[in-house]
Image (cartoon, rainbow, N blue to C red):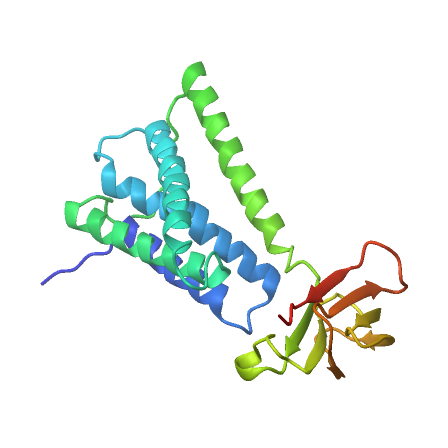
Length: 250
């Protein structure tokens, strides 16, 4: 049986390479961002267009179909991935794009789309003014999508501080609690000084704590009264508090 390679096989191979380069941990982040963008915004569109277009489609129609498939796959993917427990994270996007590219490649291959793999000079179609305008608009849309993707990749999780005030009642129930644990965990970008002002219902105490990123501070307090409250400030006491936690004992 004579099996010949076709142009679409290069799309599947490129998708495999881009996916591996995007998810492997030892690949530099800058390079993996580029390969991930190529997979999500180019290869999915190329494979999708090959799966739906007739073989006689001209270059402008093919390019417009690539843009439409790329953006349509992204919109549908966002709706699907949003239902996953881990949500819209990088790995889910890449895996979805890789799977959709392979599915579209298989459909296109079954239809016999994609000519034989030949090395020759490409032929560029003659463009009318309308076709040129459509092509220019499509290029702008793809460029904007790629720019947004690369820009968002450089924005990590927004720095914040996690604060909890947990009563010592049965199963941490606040009813009848006589003590509580105040905890602070910093997710800030650098070391931060915090001022915790705790009104336990028995007394008001102040604690100054300096935490490095991901460092945790906890302290046990006896509590009384109806509503013990802990206010956490950044650097100094100034309203409004950075974080406020409380529970009701009744």
